[in-house]
Structure formats: structure tokens, C-alpha cells
Image (cartoon, rainbow, N blue to C red; front, side, top):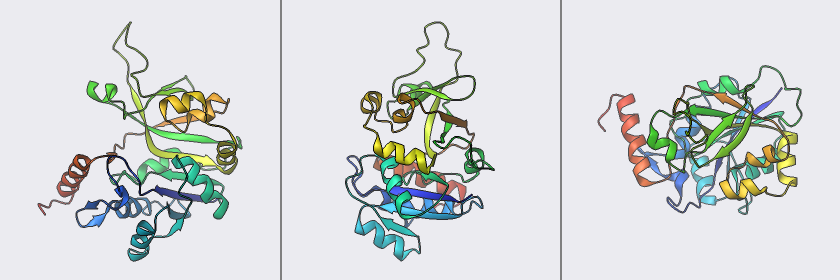
Amino acid sequence: MKILGVIPARYASSRLPGKPLADILGKPMVWWVYQAAKQSPLLDDLVVATDDERILSVCKEYGMNAVMTRADHDTPTSRIQEVSCLIQADLYLQIMGDEPLIDPKAFELILPKELPDDPYYVAGVTNRMEHPADVIDFSNQKVVCNARREILLISRSPIPYPKGTADFEYEKITGIQLFSKKALDFYAATPKSALEKAEENDLMRFIENGHTVHAVLSPYKTVSVDTPKDVDIVCDILKKRNGSDQ
């Protein structure tokens, strides 16, 4: 079983253009993601999938394996599907390029020891949210699962609504997601679903069309970088980790 780690890294970003190249303590953000991911012994290979020559050039400068993909992808899953046509693997692990604090220990939770029986296998790592403000933040995509930890719905709204009780542990989907080759090909061949359009979440295309998406709860938290303020937060955390005031 071959597992390929893929870091989608597009240049365009409405709130932070050139986001993968954002400076974090003297290194581009994508470098931090790559360095963390390559520590995992579970990945057979690792590649950055970009749509921009500037990102490709930086990857080469820092010795990171990278491939150029089309510029018209509107989702990370679509970009990873193109990579699956270029590089053969049994499973493709999405590692978002805007989460520089990613912990490779989370990979151990989502990566199976054997190839799953389901040829359309899809899974995503989730984190519990600890603060009410996080639950109402639309950038956090909340998940509701059944008893088998299969995702029923993903929404930017607070779901479930706490009408009867507030005693509920809310979870959000993270940037670590796993796909089989057939799942990626299904995604590419299937029109965008109604809920996916509304919520802007790739995984809803599978759920709406009857495919199981497994939720894997992880204690390893990260910070998604979407704004310059997020860059400052990540820099402060890394300084504390390294015991540095640089």
C-alpha cells in the first residue's frame, strides 16, 4: 500500500494573496507544513501541488518535491485528483498548505494499516472546539456524525442547534483528509452538489451522493492561516515552542 502526502498550495487568496509564501520566522509557510509532514514514517512520498511558478520556485529552492497543477481548480480535492493522475498511489493524504502547526501524529489516527475494503474511501480528521466563539465562527466547518463516526452533515452554522441542551461537544473538520484514487476520480466526474455549493465544503459531494466519509477525532490542534493576524499568531506559538524571542 502506497500513501502519498499532498500539500495543495495555490497562490490566489482573497484575504492573504500568496499565502503559501507568507513569511513565518524567516521561512515560507509551505516550508513549515512540508517539514512537519515529512517527519511521518507513514508517508511513502510527499509533494506540494501548486498552480504558480513562484511557489514552485520556492519549493525547488528549499529542496521540496513539487508539481505544477492547473490554475482552474476551485477546491483542494480537485487539485489532488489531478496529482493522482500524475503520481500513482493507493491513498492520497491531503495536508493543507495553510496549517504550519500541523502535527504528523495526527496522520497515525487517519491512515489505515491496510487498504480499506471500500474502493471509494474518504476520511477526515476533526478537532473538538473548546470555545463558544469558535462554534459560531463560519470559518470553522462543523460536523455531525452518526454512532459509527460517519459524517452526516458539515456546516458553517452551529450544528446541531442547542435547543434542548448545550451539553454537546462540537467538532470541526481540519485540513487533514484521506482519499482513495477511485474516490478522487468520482469527485472529479461528479457535478458540485447543492450543499457543497452552499457550504463550500468538498466532502459534501461524497456525502450527498451516498458515499461514506469517516470522521477521525484528533487531539492535535492546529491553526489555519487566512489573514496576516493568523500569521502573527503562528509566529508567536512557534517562538514559544522554540523558547525563542526572535
